[in-house]
Image 1 (cartoon, rainbow, N blue to C red):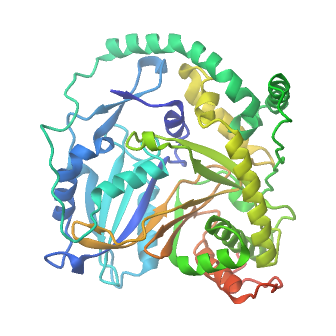
Image 2: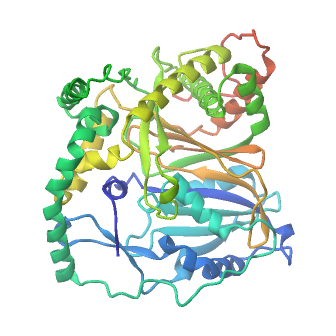
Image 3: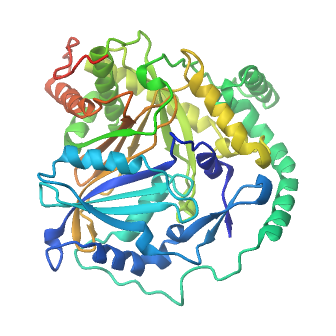
Length: 500
């Protein structure tokens, strides 16, 4: 058995009827590179069966501790049924990208069955391009961005030839899983250790609670600042790290979300982004976040709700070390940064974004890597789920004062071709999570000289989310067109509809 960490358990605790906790991707595959010129469900099943010894998370199912006395465990599913998890469907003609996005939006809206390993895979045929799409979704309690990329990497090959995997003995953990009484005893033993864990976490977590969701609890922010000042005084440090107090303005996508999703995806040129980066003395991530700010700005203008202040973006940052690769689970920090939707000029917006993300990196370097897990240790496991939902509810439902507005994430990927069961991977669009208060998620993954963009939004809040993809392209074109000293004036978004 393998116990979930408090951060893993948090992604389970936050699930509701309208708020799911799985992440995924839409891989676009070219079957012409396979030996048969086709890619079938049987091909995918054979590949997964062959690689299962290397992919333990695909066999894990949840085992709860009675009375919720401790965090749940992952156990190998003795009744694992691959056919339940791997499915196929076809698009009606003509099989456009819009049809694919609509179909995936419906699939991603459905929660995963907690009685089974928390993942599903859909092979989708009928695309207008002649390609085949593969939509996978897996619970965030199992993986973060980097560990998800590890799983995908184990399914992919460097050539169309499918590599043979040598394994020794049967896969899986054959150790018996304790019954309810055994789990109860184990839970009681684990619960007794948590006060000590909380005490150990106190010195690192308390001075930094303002960088976590717990800052919304009345009085806790002031206590955190006091602890930080005391810590720096005791260690004779020059002074506490300066933290800008970010206040997220209210937007349409800052409310409570419905159970239904909208999805948009597309590609941008990585070389063009690098050209802008080199010309402006910034980073690829700066350019991506600035382009996202410009696209979201256009949406806000189109809906007559552009705030004077910048939005606040939640930016996941990996804290996984080299030694922790292959351990799966979550090793992340959730950082906050201003999204410069209040700056009209693309060049000025990029410069402001560069400065803001530089400040965020300085804060990140000053924080302990295990901050989120350490902060969670202050909550006993028996009440953890309720407390996590309550804290997150406060963070997202305060009138006019959400903690964050949206999620922006940039994941670097390989710049060489990859193959799945012999089919060449043409694109891999991320499909990530939205939550109450953050009804918009823009995740970007680089691959083979392009940026694969996946945009997820609430179906009711942003029915026209597909417009963002076009505006991202226009933002990049605007930056490419400007000379070193150029500037632009704000333009009314093209192709938008005022529907509210």
